[in-house]
Length: 397
Image 1 (cartoon, rainbow, N blue to C red):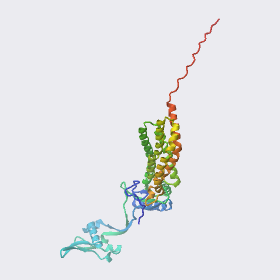
Image 2 (image 1 turned 180 degrees about the vertical axis):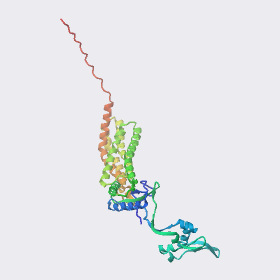
Image 3 (image 1 turned 45 degrees about the vertical axis):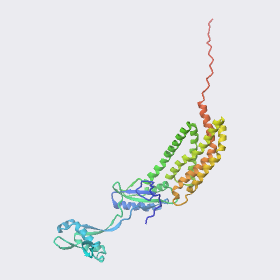
Image 4 (image 1 turned 90 degrees about the horizontal axis):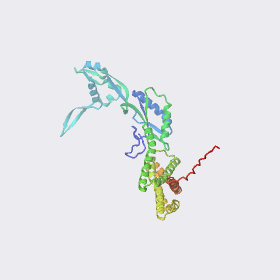
């Protein structure tokens, strides 16, 4: 019996050939027997792993009886391998040479040996065969039987046979730490010559996910900045608003560290979602400050001092509703809640910390950045004229 954790149907997080597993270890070789022996050697060593549980992905080899014909002997007697196959089929599962009619239907007549006559592998040697001249011989006269094992499943990658080992994380373990532990255990083994290990698809997918975080986060921030720059017809106010994004990401990182949550695909989705949510509070504050300044003709410091208290209640109302809505998701409640729990943790912690810091830091940036831009764009006063130098004439008396 194979047990695997539940997953969201249709969602594939990596391109691993092992389905229903979070880790994969792939061994490759030309010799099937050496590959199987090396695979179970690695599997036995991985039993000491504490961050993941491993199992073979394929079925074990099944016992079988191989019948190896003597082709020269068969040719001399006028027999073929097909004749042996038909005799074995008749003996084991029976053949239907004819049918009889009973009423208005036909019934198959199945001919086969008694089960007691083929209950032991050694009894196959005494199966009768008939040559072209109707002479009876035994199977052992033209073939030999050997006990062997057949692969329960043939697994290949790029037309080469592989041994797949599937692993599932232990409770509370991260994918990166489990991969590092498995690599450390396997590197200490002395595998036979010709056994190679293919790159782990789970490790490759984990690396791609982590490298995609700065790219997707930067793209989301750029799009938000472009939209605000077009709406404000300015670059200063959007730049002030964008200062809330580092505050939110700092809160998200703090939440992941506090809950010991690893970075994954849902964390990236939560970070991109957080970039679009957290700028709303700063937009409200900056927009109201600009309206007060245009309406009453105040300086920027006085305008932001009036806008911040007046917008405190709407900012807190929108933030509290969003944070409380994400709180059950951050707790991982319900069936399958642990899958989206990292997303809830990032949004919950990032939005909470960003809101508290936005109330104090954004007004400061609003005043300082505008003063800095105005100071640099202000024309410099002309330089005072320099006094002309008086030429001294030296007279020699």
